[in-house]
Length: 186
Image 1 (cartoon, rainbow, N blue to C red):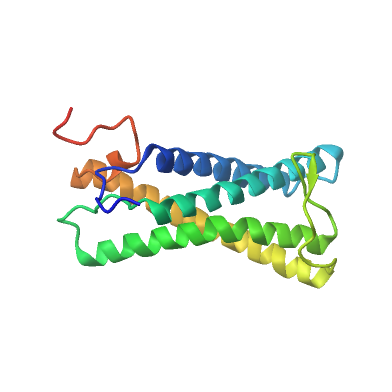
Image 2 (cartoon, one colour; image 1 turned 30 degrees about the vertical axis):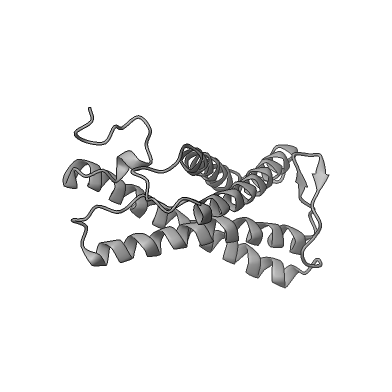
């Protein structure tokens, strides 16, 4: 592990960030679309896809957390107020926790409903809890609530990054978006 603080995130961290973002956006959109559909083979297929996305997010999140623990994040701008630095640390911690916990709540929910998760249609994952309808309802509520919490925090995260780029005109966004060069290096 390097002790120097990089100017931007590593290519691996950037790739994992955007991969997880795309997967979560797809999984969330699919969930919102499919939830009110009448029971049909198509709805069951969408549920399978949603589970596959969730398992993939979970695996990518574990890799992302491991990568982050061994590779320091770039320094925050010196001019950033201390309250904002604390907010950044808290928001990132919340995002990391949520991208790991949400797939687990989905897996628990699926287990409690008695419907197995078969990853990519190839590998059945073990049930984490026995079939239990009241528990399934609680886990469904937790899964949905945590997803909407993630949605809100991710929107604030994106808005803050855009504010840093367009209002504060600092280097925050360029650390995670490869197409944006740090200011003064254009």
